[in-house]
Length: 314
Image (cartoon, rainbow, N blue to C red; front, side, top):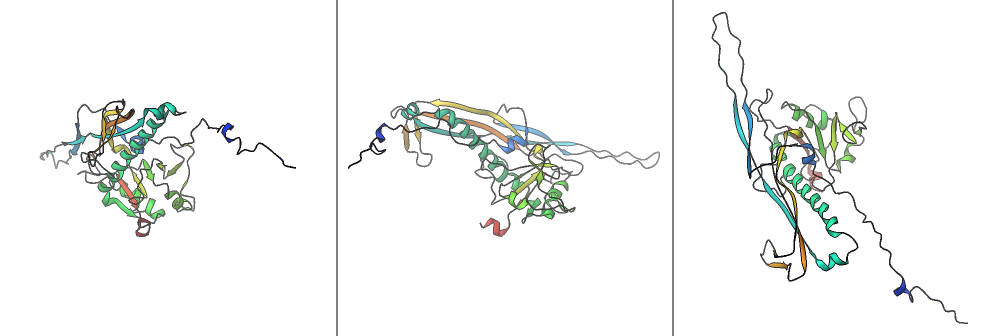
């Protein structure tokens, strides 16, 4: 006897697909530089001059009752901070917006901000895709303070290690930023008393600390482990200023060109599209004023551990 049933294949047209109404994604990540550095008042023009102490006065002993008193002086110099523009345009067909079950614009905007944060960090730390208006990146300025992997107690906290390089210039380390992959290298390291060097700091600003300095492991994709495994320094010495805060504009007219070929790739009005344009302008500097331990301002408040040949070649 034949057995007939209504199988799934025969009723597929009547079965509704379920759409989960929550997008599975992580929280957009912010800029670690802008989190740790010192923010100055907003720029009022494209360039800002920062007065920086460049020479300290000296004092002298006077010999005898009639000895001659010597003179001294104090000097300042200007460090120029120039704003650079960071921008992106995201074209979206209007039909896609209308048919979507989600607020596409609401989803795109925080991810664009995250991309901008990664660009800022990459340019300031490593010089990656650095705008020509900006000063030299932190790693280049700290080249004399480079320590070469592997990561161990001596390279981190020993004499001539990463912390010592910063302290030799009269600076204190207020934070350490590292590649996520360095966590595995830090686990198991012991201090001179046999205690774990990499341990949780429940009362600090982050989950982990190194010799009292909070440890940060950026998750915005900006940390270039081919150039540095860890960066330690006095991050408050970095200053930045906003010329134009993140500005969002929705465009429904105009054309979008390929930056390389100048060919028109989208005509918004003709193709029923809109475009999300996001722009920001900011500048940064490392003024590095003269101190009693850094009288000529030649020492830099940063050091880093560079990958060894094997790590760099991975």
